[in-house]
Structure formats: C-alpha cells, structure tokens
Length: 513
Image (cartoon, rainbow, N blue to C red; front, side):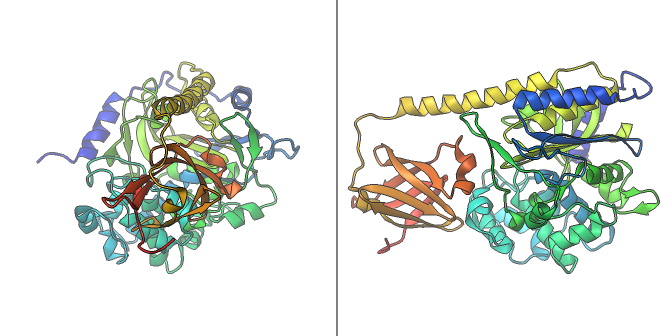
C-alpha cells in the first residue's frame, strides 16, 4: 500500500532538513533585532511595527517600533492592537482541532453533514468535501474574495454565494489559496460551540491562553485605546492612513486583532504542543495533524516572494499552516494581509523558537524581512540581507503592474467605438453567485454599480470598457493596482445580452434597466 501523499511530502521536507550551524542556540542580540526592524521600516517608509520572539517557552524579545499613525507621536508598543489578518487561519484550525480532540468533529467529516446549506458548484467536490479539504485549500475553488470584500456582509449568504461560484481546478488536484473555506470552518465551529465563531475563539483560545487584548471583531479592535492605524501605499508611492477593514462576516478567515504581547502566548502554546505549563488547550495529536503537510504548494506568483528558493526547497500546507523548510529547518508559518496591515508568524518547532511581526503598512514586506532576519540570528545561520531582498521583490511587483498596464495600452485597438449608443448598454445584469450589477447611463456616460462599489466605465475598444473604481473612497482605495473590465456581449439580434465583469458572466435581465 502506497503511503499518503502528505506523508511523503513530510518525509521529503525532513530528509532535506540539516542540523543547525551551531550545537547551541546563539544568544539573541536585542540591538541587532532593533537595527533590522529600523532598517525595514526605513526601507519601506512604514509607520510602525511590533515584534515578539519566543524561545524555549520564554519571551526573549518584545518591543514596539515607530508610530501608530503617520505624522503622530503615539508610539507602537508591545500592547498596541493590530489586525493579524490571515494569521487568524491557524486559530480557526486550532478551534477545529479542539473539537476533533473532544470527539465532536473529525477532520474527514463531510462539511454538509454539519452545515446542510453548504454546497459547491463542482458535483464531486459538493459530494465529498471535508473539513480537511477546507483547511488545506484543496476544494478546487479560487478566492472569489470580492464577494466578502464588497458584496455581502452576511456570513451564511457569503458561504452560499461562494459555493455557487465557478471552480478553478478539479477537486483535490491543486492547492489554491482561498478565504471562505476558513469562514465556513469557523462558522461550523461556532455552531458546534453553541455560539458564533468570535465567541468560541475567545472562550476556547484567547481566554485559556491568557490573551486579554485579543479580539475577533473590527469594532472590538478599534475600541482598544492603544490600537494602530492602517496605512496604504498607493501605486503613486503616496502613503496615507485608511479605514480599518470591517470584515467581521469573514470570521475565521482573518478577523482576529491582537498584540505582540498576546501573540507570545500563542507562540508558546504552539511550540509546547498545545498548552501552557500543565494546562492543555489543544490536544497534541490534533495539533500535530495541523502541523502535518496535507497539500504540496507551488511557490509561484506572490508566494515566490514569501518562499524564495534560497530559503525554501519545499513548501506544503497543513491545516491552517504553511509547513516548509526554512534554510534547512522545518518551519511552520503563516502571513496575513488587510488593506493597511501586514502580519507574519514563523516557528521552528524543533528549536522551540518562534517570531511574530506586525506592521501598519500595505503593501510592504517589513514583516517577512524582520521575521526571517530574527530566525537567522536565532538559528545561528549565515546572514542574509532580507531587507534588500524584500525591497527588490516589492519593486518587481510594482514593475509588473506597470508592465501589464503598458501592454494593455499597446493592445488597444485605436479608432473603434461601441456597437450601440450608450443607453443601449444600461440595464440590470445577474449572475448566480455574484448577484446583480446595474449599469446606468447619464449624459452619454456609463456607470456600473455592484454591491457596495461603483465603477466608471471608460470605453477601451469595441464593446469593452475599463471599469474604474470610483466609490465609496474607503472601499476602493486599494484598487489602484487593478485592471478591471466590463466586456459586453451582443446577441444575434444585435442587442446586449450580457456582460463579463470580475471574470464572471452576467446575463441581462429581460425588460429591466
């Protein structure tokens, strides 16, 4: 009998792991960490960051840097509250691990047996999808993030709409990062707890682990007296404060707020096998499964920045965690991104060392540069200049955006015009998952409204229009690197029958404008 693929993947990672350079862990130089953080903040013009390092069940570094808001003087402290974004996912996996340990759930239970409204558009996935599939990103479904970012604020509605949307790959064939599976898993965990996800994660994890400043809603995070302000770096290189993302309906995918001090408790528990001291919080067996590779990850696209070849030969995903090698050591990690925040958590379980870094600027790679620098020093590895690597990686990302725009400009067919007068495109267009998009005409100009967003439609060529996000300002601030189109389709009678928008095919509703 052949061993499961995830067991083989773990064996490959372990086989490639090499011993640390030094037999004894080198002492961490606080001044060296300070210098690394200050260099990263300067390189990215970031307002502030917070760092905690845990080793051998002790906090060996805990400090805030910079300011909570650009232009202000309130400093970031170890107790400044930041959203940790997708670093929430391991908490949701831990919540399910508790339920597994209590016999209330199995990793391989079918999701529909616990949530009868959960359906997927692919028949095989719909019939077979399990919680292991949800937590390892192997449902065959892509992100469809704009459903929760801009369309619906209701968790059950979000789960239903995401499930009705188009799949991108065949079930269990490919690892593809997606958020709503963790929303779904968290929603089920809340139901099994007799509450909701936010209440369950507080009662089952934050409180037992001694994390008093950690919360699970945007309102609670902003209510903290000492909380960070998010900042967004525009494509024009401007850096401005922005509003907190209000995405409580996404729940277990990315809604936790915490501090460096509280996250030390999380690192300690993870490195100690699921508890603090004599207090077990997560069963060791269930936690071990979460740290075990389930799917092979191809470190391509944006993930190539996080897992460069010089640091990681293999990358896998466990249950809510990336499981990979970091310069010869097995590492368990996760990052997180919201409109104005970044976070990064990295642990080397065999060495009982972990680091958490958070920053109030996006896009930036402050958190990755600092976390890797800290691990290098904690493990006694040859020094790498992760700040320079990260700034160059971000510059390349910006160059790719500019290149894509230039390519699109070159491909535009000059001297073309729409097939029909502007008013003929006005109407209501529907899609089974994405709901209704309304196109209106005024003064010969077209506007498209979908969910909370409004787009100005600028003619590109033929019946294709550039969809330029114009409002609300707080909702569209981070669309400045996006290229969005509305491509109208004409039927055999010459009338508009649909529009392709957000890569979804909307059909015109008969008789409605």
